[in-house]
Length: 529
Image 1 (spheres, rainbow, N blue to C red):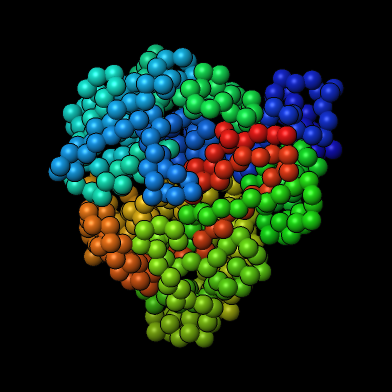
Image 2: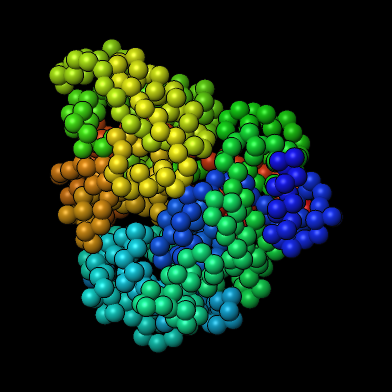
């Protein structure tokens, strides 16, 4: 009955004949099951949630991107070429004359100027990706300028590794909007945010937004004015289905085409099903526990160290996350510049007890732990709760939906957050900035995860900023490797796993490309036999 209701809702939403509905997805529509209850906005200038970024990436395009199979290769998208001044501070982009928006308007340097300035002026929570280059509301009109319709000039405030800027421009917040269309819908200086946030889109990408029902579904349709290769399907329907078992059942029945949140048990269950297949890729996503050092217990370094010995990393990877995770205990993901094979922690209850004693903690205590009610978090949390209890630490698991999970994390109202970090762009600074740089050292003064969990990274913060300014790639690599060991040993972050990306797909679907970052899955290449 539940399946029938879901399919009827889908057919109604797509405007199709319910009477003709079968248990199969429409041939012209890619139906994706995912956990999208975290989505707050679809405006590329402020989007940052996993589901929102995934959606935005199908609608908006950046100046440049990277080859998903070789991230070191920067490729042009809305820019066809670029040059860098001798001092490394001025980047000049020549726009791709073929590109146009869904409205039919050409994509010009003035649209890029408007879009990137807009991010800075809106001061959204995602703006740090752009403002970290020294852009402020006061200087952005001088530093991001269209010299003419085809030429965009960007002057950054300091000299950084050039790839750093390219990777940041490739991120979701670098999505270029149709300035003419968005300007027409500005209200009281909001840069069209209210118009773009939930009901409209203004991109040049392969799809357009049709409808978003928060915590339920997102429907996209093919951009018939798309200037690139025509997408293989007419529509993408992303349905909120958080439970792994439900996703697997829908996939096996043919009611969905892509299952984005399958757990290990369900991957095991579909391995012999000829009607489905599993596609894999390298992922930059790492999973961690953030410890809020504002809590008096967690303010003690020995307590933090003890907790790092109370997680059964190998056991969870081998039993709960079979094949989906590998143990990873540093801030830079494997596959990125500066990645390091350093895994000093394993489950050791007696060592943890000794560390707690050294910290002067002689009796048990409780910690509120916020957990998303989506796989794999709940199973992991219960496993960690059990091993921490062996040392007298009680984790009060507060299992919430995606929006509450993010709200608690952003408001600092928690002791422990069990979550993930998907790099915004495939450069080590994406993670170093997040976990090791305090806002006083960030050029734009933006808050980091270190700040969010109340931790002063000290010299590590300065080391991370020095690394992103280093021009010599080998020296830069060594700098990240040096800072990581100390960070792993002293920070209030318990790094646990790096994702091995696996997605269940109907065998009739081909061409789905999984991205290196959580924002980069590419559905426009997908088609159905």
